[in-house]
Length: 419
Image (cartoon, rainbow, N blue to C red; front, side, top):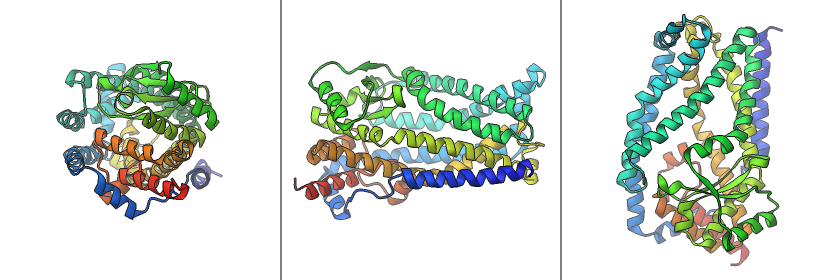
């Protein structure tokens, strides 16, 4: 069998594995959240709060979707015309056009150019966040965070680019197999490394101070059977007023992180409710699930790019001879961008199902639906969330159930539990 035949077979196997993993690991059934309860919950929220949140979201929308459309156009312009290939050549010219210069510097130049062209949309978003009081740091702080993000992306990108194009040169017929394995391995590695090495670049983390709240949180984790290395507090207040918490890391790097804004704005019982939700993610191994599906998706993408890269008309549009050469990197970016947009609704759906399961876990663990509902009200008010967003936007990009859905789920739980 030819390498292409093996690639087709591998692609089918990866698609099947991803489907099986999604069916088995993703909670497709969700806790009840009757629409009647959602409508009632919406009616009980302060009218001015809802109006203010919707005004804020409307102000964000042009920049958000403008960036999406413009970013797609830039990716297609660079990838489906010879412009991207020429940019890669130009970046490698000072080094004699050596393939490593084209691969690393050319690839980073393409990504940087795309980022710079969409930078006005990022600035728009920051201006809206500042105008509505959600951002607490000025333009200098925003610029520093942006530069940090570019630096981290450049380091990871340079390693990935050098590794990928080294493989394409050493194994020109079978690079897709080694590349798929490498992409999957990189996803797994980053799941371990990002919480330890990258997150501290943007926030300072300190252990939650000893006291009743920390004792309760650690006791709850032990009662839940979830090994947690630590409960950390992130200094999020230096850049935002938003409240949040999350679980990150795998195995020995797993920790629950709480924003300092959450500790300031919420009651201890509400903080406990939020952390119970995060423990649900750990209990159900959601980080492992995301890592596994991400690794399978990354491997699948490499094989799919190899197969698409043998299509002559596509190569002629990009002005390249092979998808495996560094000059074809803009073409790969264009294909990945289109694939990401197509997959966005499915990824959002999976995320909402996972988050709904974590909500159910929090309700069962704390047995306190009233506090859970109060916390959802507080989250929506401080984060300026639209409690019942437009249906099209919800289906396209919502990673969490809406505020009214979460409040309705708490009310359904309370009725079932007789509380």
